[in-house]
Length: 569
Image 1 (cartoon, rainbow, N blue to C red):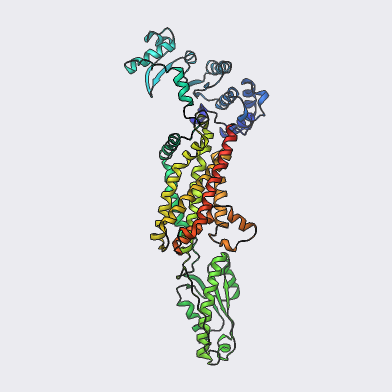
Image 2 (cartoon, helix red, strand yellow):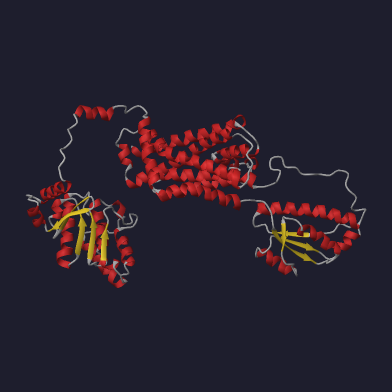
């Protein structure tokens, strides 16, 4: 209810630039719950009063500042507020537009009785107000009518009175600093302008580091987000099968069928649910994911086994997750084969004669067949592609949105210094993430580390150099932080999951998929991470991957420099 009685206009243009003048007014009429019968005439009235007829259908973001301020004021008074609050409404507006704007304010105040509060640093504007509050450093120094303030501080003008008030508040007036000779100014502007300067780079990095430390939420997401993703992926993407829910549809009900099922019941890989009564229930429980495996034993199973004939068993698997289903199928086949041979040996000696040769499967690098041993180190490639690129992608585009990037354009700062300075804080933060992820793999998930720690650290450094450079490249191409975030999410996460070898080995990819695996840095770091964790590899075997990552860093940085040069021009 209070908001409907108050109008507010911010210093910066805060309306929707992609909407037209009329569309912005219509939108805010709806936000303030104006009836359609009332809002239509009110919008037309404001368009005429604020002289917006010729630009009513134009996008508001492309309008000159004076017209945008008029539109902002029209939106602020659209709902006929009793109080209007304006934050430096004429800042940056030319004198003619400022006078026109004040004409509208005086009309609102004197003719419509609207109480207007405004902040301004123009004393000729303050002179038009009924009462003035002189402020400094957040403190009210004096409050009265303009004439009374001039008399109180013995000022010929309101500006002189304000200066005297400020001097009294500070206790003294400091003399102006001595002027710098023009020759020294010119010398300072052009000295060392052509050489790469480490001090300028450090200045940019220091400023970006302070910004990162000031934004505690972003810093927390950068550190804790990596740990959270590691936990989620470490536990959630595992392809191991334990306690697989299964149910039995036993149509034979013989000692042989019960002995066959006992092998599944006693295995840690399977967990039995209540029995299935008919075929319809079997399909229904699979569809509802109540069970992942259904074992159907047909009538005559025991008789066929006793007679030496090959018995038939149906195993129904939920294939919603193909990789997990494939692993489950292998477990079912292994239990079935061992169990059926044992049953046959006891039921029919002729069928159960041991074979001359016996095949045993061995796994070289992952003897326990635990998927987290391979996936855990690989997930680091996904996390260190996503979070570092996301953080750096916001670096340049944030400067664009704030307009502060023009400050860098006007200084001797080189583009390479600017990029490397922006990158440095996030590079350090990413290396901390790398150390935390390695520790989590080793001590939280119990993944054994067999290779060279220095090789993993060196490869990780090159990888985060590449991914942070990719973030800067995305930031150089985009103009808004939302676009930068979405672009980074798509460009980093999807190729890393699909083509880096995280789920499907790169050696099995062909055609366009194999090419995609070569064009993204994640696959090369995944080779380093898995190689050092599980295969005891060192830099001698992994130098091609390290060289490729350094090439990605150079390529992304070069493209970012070219894009910044084009935008600066």
